[in-house]
Length: 416
Image 1 (cartoon, rainbow, N blue to C red):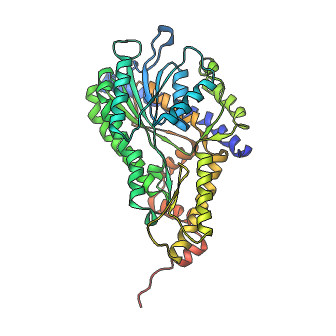
Image 2: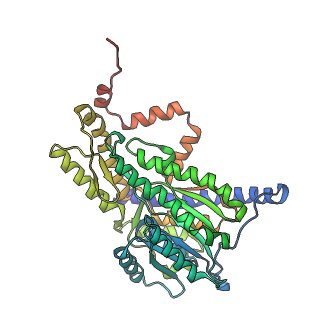
Image 3: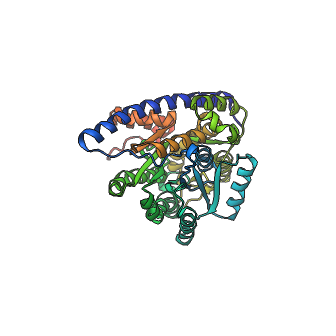
């Protein structure tokens, strides 16, 4: 159920986010050209930008494109002139994205090519590489210039109760799959001097309780990206990360037939989206996470305390016994997270379209930055982490998730 006030608030922050992004562009454009001309800095790249008037439609691959950020990014990049290979994990998701594309009545000049690529399967990745390579080979109008690593999921659970297998499964998809995809597509990206965009999260630097596996995976993506980009620079290849805050996917945006006109003025597009999303249903994480929370608390009522929930709609079972002390500490934290997550799904979170716009920024930026942050919560979190002393941040985070019962249970230890 969409909350009108929350949705109005989150949508109102999107144009402000764009203004901040443009101000940031102005600063690093000036610094980029200054370094380039005066001290031999990085050369600006423009071949990753589409040029519709010249029939130039560079190709990109988006992983996890069946819903959420992946689907919004595929649609948005295609509307801006890219040839998009939208990858999904299986036949069921392939039919889903085909239905999504068909239902939008896309104009003839919008090119989205769905394909199956299970990012956890080396053979499936190799098959996708072959398909993409064959499609772009010999065509100077559609060079392969970008891979957007997006497929992944989140998990909310106390680390003590989370099974090792659940942590490894999250890392397989949220971290190792990124590496597998980058390595597989690197030869083609080198050929066309393209760039890799790794979708991370502000959870990688905010580090809240109950998000240990997810925060660790996203921090790993951030560290990997910032180090690997230096190794790729000599080949003319770029790598960056996008740091979204809470994100929801809205079922209907302005018709892509109007994107070319509206996207000339991003603020116009977002003001239109502002009114449309007040009445739109959210998809993706919303219904799934709601189902997971329902299952979690049903287990608690039955006397069994599971570890937590994930954004795929699953209850994460624990392989540990949960004592009364642990229940008193973790229970209030999980309850608070349920309220925050459902508020995000009901409208407090930014739309996936806002993240897609930031991915477009990263694809077209002549001086690719190490990271791009999008979302009012992510920007606030980033500012707090940069400016607030660590001791104050720690106390603030602890107080946010503690309760009186937590404080009583965790009274200081005194030796007898």
